[in-house]
Image (tube, rainbow, N blue to C red; front, side, top):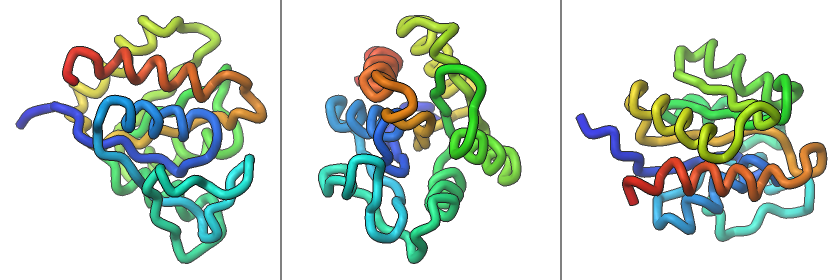
Amino acid sequence: MSTRRRKIISGGQTGADRGGLDAAMDLGLEHGGWCPQGRRAEDGRIPARYKLEETASADYAVRTEKNVKWADGTVVFTFGTPQGGSALTIELAIRHGKPHLHVDLRRLGVEEAAARVRGWMEREGVRALNVAGSREGSARGIQRLVWRILKTAYAKEV
C-alpha cells in the first residue's frame, strides 16, 4: 500500500489546526474535518474555506474525538508539554489505538520537525493526517510554523 498522503484534517481552531489546513490548501491536498456545532473558534466563526463539518455538539472534545478516530494518525504541535486540548488529543489517540506524534517546537527547528513528521507518517502508513495542537492565542506564531513544517514535510511528494 502506498504511504502517499492524501488528506489533512483538523478541528479548525486557530494555531496548529489551521496551520495544517492552510498547508493542505497550499499543497493542493484534500482537507477538512469536524468542528463544534456553531463553528466557534478563538477568533470567531471558523471560515468556510476550511471545509469543516459541524458535529451535533458544541463540545470541543466531541469534534476532537471524531477527528482522531477518522484519521490514520494524529500529530500534535506545541511549545512544551501538551496541555488542555492537546493533552486530550493524545489521550484520545491512545484510547482508540491510533498512532500519534507529539512535536515540541521549543526543541525542534522546521527542517528537523518536518523530517520527524515525514518519517513517522511513512512508518505508520498515515494517509489521512489529523493536525492538532496549541492555539494561536497561547502560542503566538504556531499557525505559520506548523504551515512551514507541513509544507516542508510534504515537499518531496507534491
